[in-house]
Structure formats: structure tokens, C-alpha cells
Amino acid sequence: MNEKMMTCIVCPRGCRMKVTFEGDKMLSCTGNFCKRGADYARAEIAFPVRVLTSTVTINSYEVPRLPVKTSAPIPKDKLFEAMEKLKTLKVSVPVKHSDIIFSDFISKGVNLISCRSVNS
Amino acid sequence: MNLNKSLVVVGGGPAGLAAAIAAKENGINDVIILERGSCLGGILNQCIHSGFGLHAFGEELTGPEYAGRYEEKAEKLKVDYLTDTMVLSVSHDKTVIAVSKEKGLLIIKAEAVVLATGCRERTRGAINIPGTRPAGVFTAGTAQYYINMIGNHVGKKAVILGSGDIGLIMARRLMLEGAKVEMVLELLPYSNGLGRNIAQCLEDFDIPLMLSHTVIGVSGKERLEGVTIAKVDDRLLPIPGTEQFIECDTLLLSVGLIPENEIATGAGVELSPITGGAVVNENLETNIEGVFACGNALHVHDLVDYVSDEAARAGKSAAAYLNGDKKESSQYKTIITKNGVRYCVPQKIGTLTPEIPLFFRVATPSQGSTILIYADGNVVYKKREAYLTPSEMQMVKLSDETCKKLNEAKEITVELNTK
Ligand SMILES: Cc1cc2nc3c(=O)[nH]c(=O)nc-3n(C[C@H](O)[C@H](O)[C@H](O)COP(=O)(O)OP(=O)(O)OC[C@H]3O[C@@H](n4cnc5c(N)ncnc54)[C@H](O)[C@@H]3O)c2cc1C
Ligand code: SF4
Image (cartoon, rainbow over all chains, first blue to last red; front, side, top):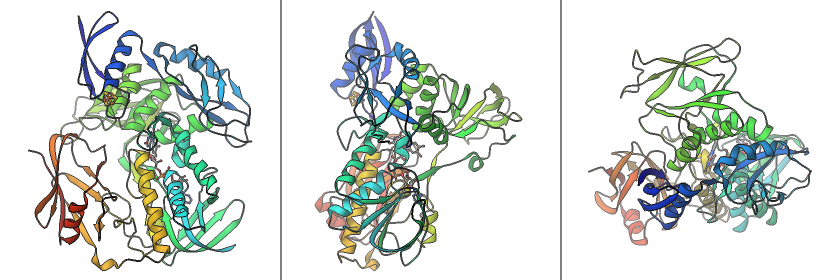
């Protein structure tokens, strides 16, 4: 059995949790204020994921960069691969916030979406 | 161009937007926002990470998404605004002078003004690092602007001074953008950043956080070549013999924010030496009748949700003022803060109601302290907090009964009992 201290990143409260695990299976979790903490710890032991936010090039007069994010968390060890892929994307105006820029981005079912509207 | 307006809102960030929206919702049609930037949204446009709106919308938004929600609302309500318009001064009689890219010089006679000019970052000059003045030294916010708004790189190998949230967020951004962050230094023995940001911005990328450390020198002729760091003692002075040279081409400074108040000073608004923002009453009105302040211009907030909330109250107060609901200012009493409470906003109150929160910050971190509020020496509010830290603004809302006691009291005190 292994033991690990972890900070829950789900909300700003940032609970410090003590987690015990065997391989990629969580055995216990203490210190979490709510259930989401234990869910986070379980995922973190088995398969850590993160939401990626970044920017991509856009052919706009208003702004040179369009802020984007993944619609759901992607594997943590693919963050750098995702950043490389973003460099190859170029968005054309107009774009609205929540528009899908790229479907099945890195993970199946995860979309890259626009975080703002740009008209021209 | 000469104009007359009921309400002029200076600054189109989240504070200015929320204030203008609230004023409009409370019957003031003749509102205009003046924003010096090329779009509304303020600093949120460059804060592309998520973590905004958990209180206001119950979901985690990025900065641009959060700003977008308010912009849409402003648009729906047809709130008037001018971007690329810099306010140069507001006079005591509420004459606003501004220059606009589109309209040229503007002289606006306003009946009420909301100051929502945000804050700016402390610069290296303000913390006096000795050494040369090479390129490659940025404030964290400037680097954030270059990277997220323009798409430029700032450097390849970086050291970050200051472990507040902006410093932590920028450490992750630099790593994702392909730079290497050698370390984040913090002068204090604890970080002022959120635990979740230390986890997801530093630990995720194996960036060391060096507490009780600072930069004591920078070197490099044209471009930064490295920094000398040292451990500090409990008086925060560098300890001789602990110096270390760290090679890097970029130094980011994330050493604090100060409310932006040149305009306020020009108008004769009284400022607090502790917050750097205006001294206000419970209606967020300054010492100048009809001039209100909110958001980071009033005091530096950590959560934009509280900014929007506060600014909406400023907008509502401005509307009440314009609708003829004026108050006598002689009845105000100053809230006394002591024993570990650094400040309280509002600083003075006449009539407190349960909708009006008191915001304050503590001076040092503590565990199990009790927040105490007294009316003429009698405890009227008491709350034990598991963990208090200077980086987290505290918000207290009081019951009807407590407000009544405070309203009747001659002296109000807020303090901390650390036992
Ligand atoms: C670099 C930086 C990063 C931040 N990151 C975060 C974060 O990650 N999360 C978080 O919750 N908070 C963050 N904050 C705090 C954030 O500023 C507030 O949450 C919020 O944006 C404050 O809103 P505001 O409207 O008061 O100020 P701002 O957003 O700064 O808006 C003020 C506006 O007033 C305009 N203005 C100023 N002077 C004039 C003038 N003379 N004439 C016309 N217009 C003027 C400015 O251009 C600006 O648009 C950050 C702050 C900074 C400085
Ligand atoms: S455990 Fe719950 S309360 Fe604690 S940080 Fe995680 S989500 Fe927030």
C-alpha cells in the first residue's frame, strides 16, 4: 500500500487530502470536504486528466489570438502533444463563443471550443 | 465634443460592466462606459485560464468567457459604451474629460461617476532589485498580455519572483508554451497562491517553489543572463552565504497589485493608505458626493465574482443617488480594525443592511482564529475560521439584528482572536 498527500484542484477551497492506493486503485481518501475530492483523487491515481486552456491564431482585425479550451479534461500526459497540435490550427472569423473549433481533440468526444466571439 | 450624461462609468472591465448594467436595471438609461482598451472585459481578456464564475454562475469559466457573459448582458440592455477612449480627468464637479480615437476630445458633464479603473502591477522599481537593466524582466501581467493576447514568446528559461496566483498561472503558461521555468521564488515563508494553483501549475510540471527566497541581483548587458537569489531570514533580509546564481533569460515579477487611482486623486477622492483605493461608505460612495468606486480600483480582489457583485451594488447606489435618494454624510462612523485585521471595506458606515457585505483581509496566516465584530465594545458577531490567510479576502454578511446593533452603536470594531 502506498500513501500520498494531494491537493484537490476541483474548487478554490483546495482541500489537502491523504490518499492511500495500491497500483492504480485508490483505497482510501481523507481530508476532502466533499465527494468531488475523492472522485478527483481516484482519477488522479488511475488516470490523471486536465482541462487545457490556450490560444490559437485567428485571421481577425480585432484580435491576433483566439482563447480556446477543451470541453472536458484530456489526459495529463498529452498536454504537450495538445499544445503542438494547437500550433497547426488557424481559425477564420466570424467565430462565436462555445463554437467547436476542432472535434475529437486529443481524446474522443472532447472538443476544442472557442472562449470568445470575434466578428471581424 | 460636449455631452451631458446621468452616469459615466470609468473603465469597462468586469467592475465597470456590472456597475453600468445595475444602473440601467435600476432605471438610469443615460449611462455610458468609457474604456481605454480596444474592447470591453478589462484584464479578463488576457486571463485565458479557467477558474472564474464559480460563485456567480456555478460553473468554472475562463476569463474571456466570464467577461463575455457580462458583455452580452450589457448589449441586451443597450448599455452605451466607447472603447479606445481614455479618461484623462474627472473633476470635483464631475466633469469628465476623455480622448477617444473615434470622437476626439470629449467633455462630459456627469451627474454621477463610477470609478472602475482596476489595478496595476507593482514593478521592479517598486521593489528595488539591484543590478543592470537588461531586457527580459517583465511583470507577470505584461508577460501574460504578450503571450495570450499577441502570441509572442517572452523567453526560454525563466525564474518567477512571487508565488501569488498570477505568478503560478504564468509558470504553467510558460511551460506549456515551451519555455522552462527554473523555479518560483517567494519572499514569505508561505505562498499567497491557492493550493489548487500550486498543485496544477507547479507540481504538475515539477517546478520547485522556493519559500523564503528572493532575487538580490540581476545580470546581463542587453538580455538577462541570470539572477542571483538568496534565502531570507525571518526579517525578510537576505542571509549572507546563501547566494546562488541561476542562469535564465527571463525574470517574471509577480509582486503585488495596486489599485489604479490617478483619476480618483484628481477628483479629490480620499484614498486609504492601506488598500490604495478610495475610502467609501456602505453605498460605495467616496467622500465626493455622487462619485462611487468598485472592483480592483477600490481594493484588490482575488475573485472576480466578488468584483461583479460589489460593482453591481455601486451601480445600484449610483442609481439611487440619481433618483434623489441622497444621504447625509455627517452620520458616518469609521470602522476600526485591529489585532490582525488589516482593513475593512467599506471603511465607514451609516446604515448597514444584511445585503451589504463587509470585506476585509487579515495580516498573517493563522489557524482556528475567531473573527470578532464589536458594537461599543460588545461582541455582535463571532465566527471561528479553520484557516485564514492574507491572500484570501474575507466576506462577512450580517443578520438584520446585528446590523441594527451596529447602526445604533457609536463605535464599531473588527478584530481577530488568534487564541
Ligand atoms: C495581471 C492580472 C491577472 C489577474 N488574474 C486573475 C485571475 O486569474 N483570477 C481572478 O479571479 N482575478 C485575476 N486578477 C484580478 C482581476 O483583475 C479581477 O478579478 C477583475 O478583473 C477586476 O475587475 P476590474 O473591472 O476592477 O478591473 P480590470 O479588469 O482591470 O478593468 C479595469 C478597466 O479599466 C480601464 N481603465 C483604467 N483606467 C482607465 C482610464 N483612465 N480611462 C478609461 N479606461 C480605463 C482598463 O483599461 C480596464 O479595462 C488579475 C489581475 C491582474 C492585474
Ligand atoms: S474536496 Fe470538494 S471542497 Fe475540497 S477542494 Fe475538492 S471540490 Fe473543493
